[in-house]
Image (cartoon, rainbow, N blue to C red; front, side, top):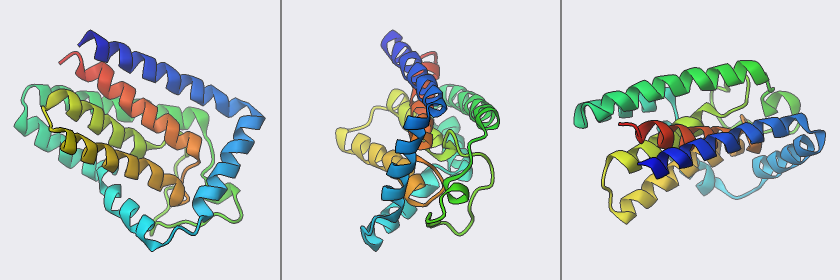
Length: 193
């Protein structure tokens, strides 16, 4: 599992560098333009339905339900998964409070919010993307899944992450940072189990 641990640390460092990118005005300008393109694209209702179906896998409630199942199914590794998930939540919250990046729907006059309840906390990193990719990376290390099952899990995590920008609540760099945080956290922590 040393390779998974090294990958987790490398991914987490990439996340740190992407957070530093928020200090560069040119990067922020590109991030805003990409958000506007993703948020306003007229891709049709089918894409929004796909993102809505994937969304529960990134929510706190969905994550708690998955953690409970994993704890019951794979004790004691599941307990380690739950502990690492709790620390991920604390780190993610600390980063949000430290960065204090506004949500796109507060900064972009043309942003379309496609959620019934828009989050009010800071934007970066995306907690839903972090939880979805943490869940994916941990499950890949805990269970022997067939390649089709791995693909389905990856598509669900990607759907959660990409849906955050489409729904108007995150910039692309927020989603990128959350995804890297979740992937790195899962690979680093679960390699110790």
